[in-house]
Length: 282
Ligand code: NAP
Image 1: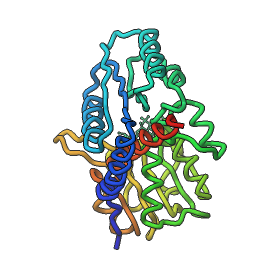
Image 2 (image 1 turned 135 degrees about the vertical axis):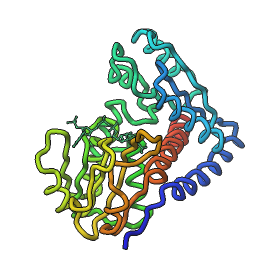
Image 3 (image 1 turned 90 degrees about the horizontal axis):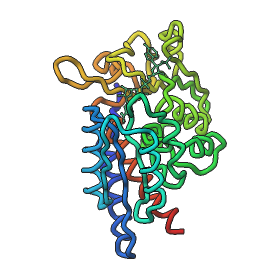
Image 4 (image 1 turned 30 degrees about the horizontal axis):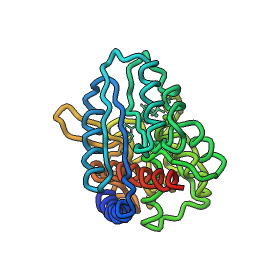
């Protein structure tokens, strides 16, 4: 029988603790503040930005949106980032992806000061995570690691399979799992016979964006399954990458969608803003 990893509840707990920390910072005259930049009007991004704004508000973190037209040039975007880098009232800077195709997103991430890079996408933070130094860790993989910690799921020596190798989820997830001494295998769109690989896994983390991709016959009994995927079906419902009904009959732990990794991503963003504020106070 599978135990549900309740990301919503865990995120609530983390946010409650952060709210107290923010209140203490405010008492000493420090107001943590996040700046979110969005270029264009991707409907998904609009929802994500709104959710981040609400979460900041509830935690007492100040929030400012910088919205730009689709045709904003890369140069203009870099100037905005530089302005925010130099603004001492801004502690965290987040560039919402995707950005229009004419903008090199990696160039933009590189422009964000590493100590304000609360999404952990600046190569300095990516590199620090890789060499095991303190870093801002990409919020989704960080949230997944927090789930393992909270539920006392031991990763050392375990066979972990990560589905997906994007820069924002899959790749930092690899490093986070290595740092926990798991043995990591990564699958992507060119991987052959994924089911044979996942069947041997003690832990599977799926971040590919394919509804109900991971089926019951692809998982080992007693394994832990973390579903990062967020897929909207034609009827408007949201499902993950995992065929939850069937797979949850075999796993020891599993995350639901919604209510699993999603809320943890936002909680870890708030965590990173508070961390950035404290670093900048020094
Ligand atoms: P992405 O940039 O599109 O990357 C998808 C990855 O999956 C790629 O590495 C791709 O392989 C791989 N892939 C695609 N189809 C595959 C298949 N049939 N078999 C094996 N691998 C396949 O997506 P992302 O930004 O990482 O996001 C992945 C999913 O997580 C999406 O559903 C997204 O909405 C969700 N997400 C959720 C959160 C959250 O907070 N819960 C946060 C971020 C993203 P190639 O590299 O070979 O193309």
